[in-house]
Length: 323
Image 1 (cartoon, one colour):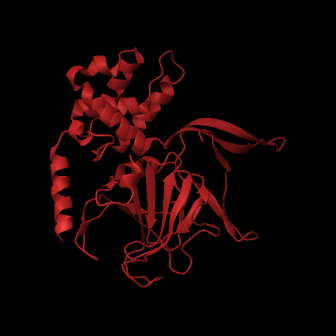
Image 2 (tube, one colour):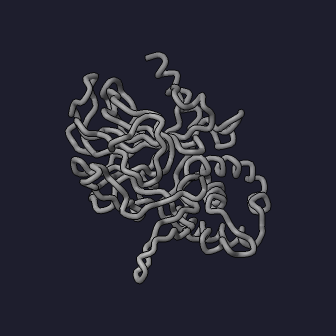
Image 3 (spheres, rainbow, N blue to C red):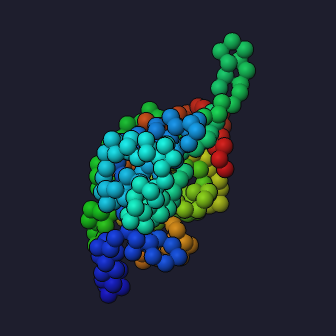
């Protein structure tokens, strides 16, 4: 109890501190993440539009600039467009922000950690309608996927930080996506399976670390008896959009393979790791992913069950060209 009280007091101090104080030291120790799906989507579109121009603009720079100007609060699509227009003229963030520039580095590093794997170069396999020949078509844009496969319905709401009481009183550090039993769950981003198995809180769960090791994706409450895609195990590398498991309601029990949660859903969480000491500690950095889920809701992986191979496969083969 005393240990949790100390952690609560430390968190309260950080919440009251400006971003520059939160980022003091060798690495960032607390994150203020308030981006809307609309602002992120517009920033991505602006980067794509300006990518071939004389002065390309990064969508993360657009977001960082907007966040400094808003004081870390949510800002509008118009604010993103203004930031992109200024940056595309070659005006540096330092010139635009003046004394506030000291906060820019904090937000840039934060968004590189949280969003660094969502946009980039990838390729999908296409088939020529006349010749039947297959080829790889390179694309630049959103290369991550919704955690829910294409064709499966789900609902979600803003629930980050709400109260949870199993085990002890604590905050909910993720977003619950409500759906049907057995709905295929896919990897949002490519990476390495770092955790697999039973957890008394999350039931059957999967933890996947991004290739740059800055993001740890957590998928919990998977299906009883058959929670995982065949062949999934710790140490395996997965690609964005690969099926990793199936929605269920396991968890809240010390006994394995128990349905002890009333509602079928996926608990989807994202931990940011600026230093390995933050991975498993009392001050882990989990961010609200509701708007990230909204951003990815229109980019979903099409999958199908191959009866001959007894495995789930992708309809459209995919390659990440950045890794």
